[in-house]
Length: 317
Image (cartoon, rainbow, N blue to C red; front, side, top):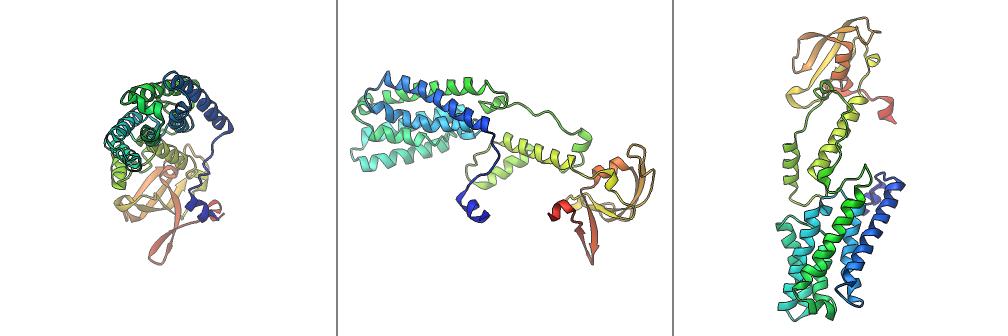
């Protein structure tokens, strides 16, 4: 069942009821304002078709305001360049069956090159070709009114509405930094991934990824902070047992506790360890119980020539 859900792309990430309701309310406000603007320039049902592409933008601005697809340049640039592509095709190609798909294809390519991918832009380009007489009569004015004007209206609505709630941020530039949950000493105990590492990883995908570098770094910060916080406690340490720092390559090592003092006193207790494998092999050292517990990633045991992780009850369940 899980495999089927994964294939279908069903996302079960937790989102609160308040967040879902606010997304709906924000979309209502944004489209209400856009609807008023559209009817001021286009008459009849043609105005409703123009609003349709803005309805898709409302989903991004109010449901996923942190998405790269929803940011101001993607929103404004995506709609405007798509409108231009649509009008050019409508004005130069008489065959609608050719002009319509060409307008969308051209819009997608231009959005890619201009780094302003905004999915609703495809509808904006298409509408310039298949729209009614009111749309065709506008010609290149279609780019400014209603497209650009509507885009600015919903952008203003998105900025004002999302700014009312502390946990939302739009544009993403104004995201609120999370307070640090671990000390700099604890940060040193984990393997750091630099911003440049994320940039390189994204470049290797050769595809547009709907998550920003900042969000990736935030996810990494939360994950590693949680990893540190649920790390080993001094009470978990046992004399004679083996422990690993869980790192990779030359930094990996296994230590054995061979002696200790005041083992019940986390603040003043200390121990002597011997490095059994990896970096610093065959050396001994002294550390406080607290420092050693921070260094430990998990307990290990020797299985013939290999070191294997000791499964905790939580892992087994």
